[in-house]
Image: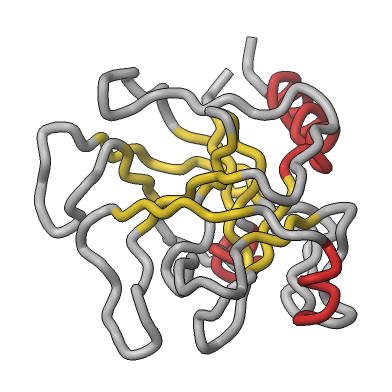
Amino acid sequence: MQPLLLLLAFLLSPKAEAAPGLSISVTLGAHNILEQEKTQQVILVTRAIPHPDYNPDTKANDIMLLQLKKKANLTAAVRILSLPRRIAQVKPGMVCSVAGWGRQGVTTNLSVRLREVELEIQSDKQCNFHYKDLYDSTTQICVGNPTKIQNSFKGDSGGPLVCNNMAQGIVSYGKKDARPPSVYTRISSFLKWIARTMRYLKLQRPN
């Protein structure tokens, strides 16, 4: 079966997905996105599969699967990141990491080099307070200490939240002023949908 990548649903809109002639590719193993590094692998996307209940207004069910045309070559720069095997507890106080090429501030440009930051898991109360009716603790994780300045921001969307070498979340949305906490998609809440989608794609594979 063709490999799948896990990303956020709002990276592609349904209109973009259906646009004729639209070509989408992913770049793996990149550090500086302005350079053609030897570690990079560019692979065409054959199918983008957003969650059927994704809501672009509330960012509910903010997750997408990308089916690649071919398998990636596993190297020192391109490795598999494990998903939770079951409903996993990501507890307040845990320190996880997130990486991306997003802005480092409201007035700055996107970074050309991959950057990583360690962030602390917060209680659901924090995001219930900051995001009112938008935050859903069953499918989202509250991340980033509000007393510190470290955070993910615009351009980091779709990046994995890694806790103990496991992808537990995906950067979803945050405040316009970049202040923490931010909201991440809780991957463990979507394991059944991921497995069901992969089974469907396997049945669609030609014999």
